[in-house]
Length: 451
View 1 (cartoon, one colour):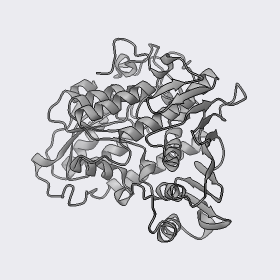
View 2 (cartoon, helix red, strand yellow):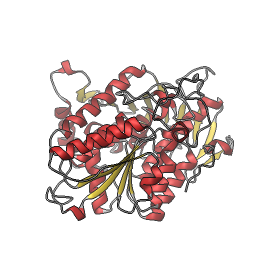
View 3 (cartoon, helix red, strand yellow):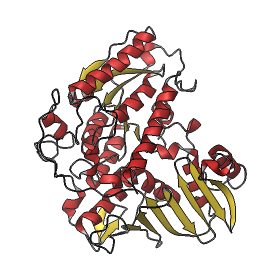
View 4 (cartoon, rainbow, N blue to C red):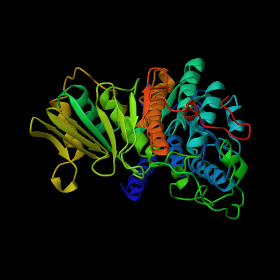
């Protein structure tokens, strides 16, 4: 799967988010009204001020029940730009709230006047910042993958429980109607017994081999690296200035998990949902037969169903004994016993996604035995804010986020080490054939650790 279309799809989502932000983004009255008293507003900080958090912040800040109290980034240019974006918006609305610009996330997590944080840093920072925020009594919205190692996932689950906090993972496909409908069709048995699943996304992570470049002015490169192994600055890892693309630090295992934890974190998450494995996972992970292949790894579940990583087709394709389901962003196809019950995979088809999903909701899914989480108005951010108010778990809470990240990390491990791995999903440990226990961890450097 070519990585360029993936970036284009993500950019389209962000553009849609920004467009929505042009109008007031108000929560339902039972959550926060437009007349929310200043003392009752949710005070948020945004950590990691690149393009992803730029879109999230613009959407959150237009809600009258939210105050952006601080922005935080190791790069001076990006944090000051984020500060200006918020201040200009507030000034245009006649609001006088102060927005602080911080370099170190610890300045944010230590503050008692901040209620929640939104984290969109490189992946190797996710768990450290998330646990620090949870331990300081803050609710957390963290981009996917929720964590960078399997051990970190367990730590985040424990921290949410210990601190009685709300956490939403930014796996926003769970809030999209096409993915929910597709998974409900499968979970209700309409395609019979699941025989196989494929997920289409790009290549796994590799070791970083980028050459050193002159340091970007205003960037604290030491802080940007944090727990990662030390190396010279390269603009591919932290682009110069205020950039408008998704940086490719994600391709290198020191900072990310390649496209396995980028787009794979989305599509493998949907596979887990469709299989009813949100609180479990595979029992075996197999590398591709070709030792040089970048696709073909498999997650094998206790019932024998295998989820295979491919580079073709729609994002998630599920084959059952009596039909099939294919789904991707803005696309769905459901075939049961040879009859096509819904199909929108091409705009030239003369129908629409809304119409095809409505057909399913009004027929097969009108009164399903298994009814999956339906996010209000399909808005992942509204879902987080609603949960903050209600104290009920959101759509992609910490257990879902950690387990979806775990299957991604397991897949990356078999690509890296090229050997089958047995897995015990009940306690996040290896089974036979066992992997090295060190593979469960991210080896923090320079004194960094989970709080």
